[in-house]
Image (cartoon, rainbow, N blue to C red; front, side):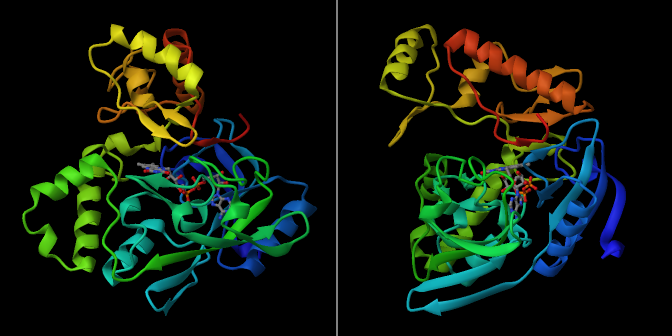
Length: 354
Ligand SMILES: Cc1cc2nc3c(=O)[nH]c(=O)nc-3n(C[C@H](O)[C@H](O)[C@H](O)COP(=O)(O)OP(=O)(O)OC[C@H]3O[C@@H](n4cnc5c(N)ncnc54)[C@H](O)[C@@H]3O)c2cc1C
């Protein structure tokens, strides 16, 4: 066991935003047996343990982590077809975008719009990953997870995961209590892509041949278009693109109730460019990017190396800052938005010891 444990590992090397000091210990586990051993080691040493996957939505402090950081590398993968349904069982350590690519190429419909999202499959239920009109909660049948408290393997069905907009019980009331080991998805054969997002629908309309494509080729087309759109916004991790040294979107889009929305709407006449507002079952979703741009910030804004992406106002980028400096910028943005609009922004990434 000790041979998979490494000491003093730089957390900036295992996170896409490249921040954080060193972890006292780091280990990548390949199966539940190794996970159990590592957690036992942490318990015996009286050290805290922190699970990670691809490190694309987590920020560690400058002083590092005085415990053991565990990276999930469980790679099992299988699927079965039942009529027009496909049931996939995906080990939590599989790279998410490779899973999407595989499914699209096989003609399995349901996750094509989630192309290009970095990180592991096991992390997707944690914040109910979503983009371009799809969320993993639309297709998750259930998950298998390791309960740290009593070292047992348990299952959750979709309902029990308590999914919401970029949230689940694993980000709220059950935070840090479970380690996802497998995610079970239900996808579909012989179905057209799910196109709910306007930018994507516009791209499709421009293509005269789209309607003649087979369903599988339509899925491939949609995946390529999404990757193109995401690359334009620096939302695909790329070592040649400095705007991707980020966690993707840094803030959630606030959702206002009727009363809050009325107040917001009354002030909108001051602004020539109005935001695109989405009415959801929980209220009015306001684009945080618009709020940020209309509170005195702009793409490329840089303070002490903590910057707003040149391509997307919602992404904060590390251009040579510390975690402290990045969080200072995040807090400055939050307080300006609050001052201008009375709306509280919430951070999307998981910030350790914050
Ligand atoms: C360029 C870029 C674009 C992005 N675009 C999107 C997007 O379009 N939509 C979107 O929703 N997100 C997006 N993200 C955020 C991020 O990719 C997702 O949240 C992703 O699911 C995180 O996966 P990860 O494996 O990197 O998780 P990590 O960053 O390693 O961990 C994130 C959180 O999940 C927990 N966790 C990880 N694995 C497990 C596990 N097996 N069991 C229990 N807890 C676990 C960690 O403890 C931590 O709390 C983007 C990020 C970047 C950098």
